[in-house]
Length: 150
Image (cartoon, rainbow, N blue to C red; front, side):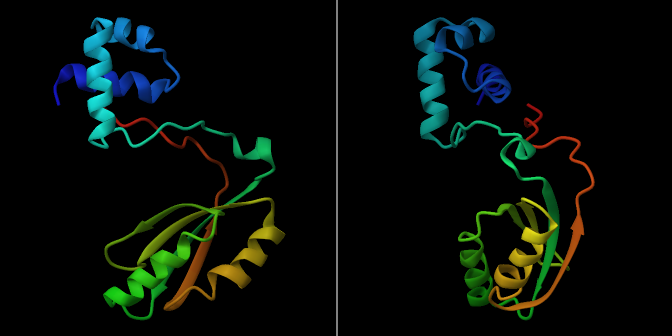
C-alpha cells in the first residue's frame, strides 16, 4: 500500500458514494489506474464494504448502553459459544473481546429504557457462560464510526 492507496481510502471513508471520476480527480489519477487500485483494495478486503450511516434517533433508537460481560470460564468452547450467540442479537451494534476483565464490551441500542431492560433480562443474561453483566448508559454520543487516521 502506498500513498495513493491511502488517499483513495481516506477519500472513500469520507464519502463512500463518490463516483470513480470524482475519486480519481481527488487522488490525482486517471480513471483506469484509480479503478484498478480501488478494485485491488476491495479484493484484498482492505475495503470490506460500503454502507450508509444512519442517525439512531431518526429511526426510533433513542437509548444506548454499553454492557460489559465477564465469562465464567474462558475456554475456547465457551468463548466461541458466547460470540456465536451475540450474532443473533441485532441490538448489539458492536462487540469487542477485551484483555483482562471484563471479557467483552457490547454496544447496545434500543428504543428506550424499557426495551433495554427486556433485552437485558431475556437475551443478555441468558447468554452462554455469562458470570456477570454490568452496564452503563450512554449520556451522549460525541462521534461514532470515525474514519481511520490515514
